[in-house]
Length: 419
Image (cartoon, rainbow, N blue to C red; front, top):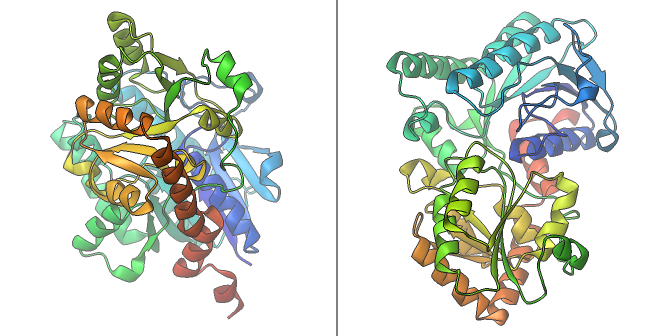
């Protein structure tokens, strides 16, 4: 048994892909017999509001017990919460957790650990991780879900040359200083290997899905009725962050093209920086076939997928996303809901290999609208894609299988610890 610390700014009950993945990682480590501790912030994502029950926290961390994380210790620190706003405010949000996490890790109550796993982005959290690792002789694993600053630069979110150079310098320092690096996509792994990192240092921890929670089920008619849908409606669901990278304007453009087909409906479940802009577009174009629902707890999402005829997973057209693998694909596939993937590269190949969906050119509303028409007109294809998508994730993308494989690869599996 080893004492393992997960250091992350984002963690349940907050919604989001990193939160789900890190929770499953914590549970997987616990099942493997390790002692697991999580150091995280008070919940504040995505709306920048700290719930009242967490506002009592002072200068030091507080311990919390979560019913669905039995046996895992969770410590929470203060953070500077940020609503939608300027990039520099987001930096304050990041650096406030870097500071409070550093203070929290110095607390004797948190204890000593053998391995620390930290989540990037935010990249700056690596400063806290490396300092703790040196001070306590703890091995550090960097878990990369998105290459930064590359992604921010490619999307035009960061343009300051000195900031880019500083971030790249920190990035290289972290790659040298950590014991292992785990990555979410093959594209990220290839990028690191091309930079000269040794293959034995880079491990693969892809996104997956809870196969028990997300499974084929009958339509939740009570929920569908509450949303204003009928059994005749063909519902396209987008579930996740409403951000810049997703290029959701093209989905609204497809919705506009499909306005004459009155039973085709679009359901956006989530939140993000682009939501006000998207809602304004819907109002301006009178897209009565589009509905928005706020972020939902993970436990509610199977009901929403049960109402869906297909799921839309879009990304902007960019070389940056050729190596992307959006986590939102997997709950849909596991729920036997066909995926319309609007993108290129790694995720497109995965959808094609799964048989659980179709791929269209990114940022091409006409192609997306045509794919929707074709699926709507072929119920047998929908059923076949649902079956094949479910079979695909059962074979390769259940969390238990993914985490067991990663533990053995990184050297933290039961067999490795026993030898």
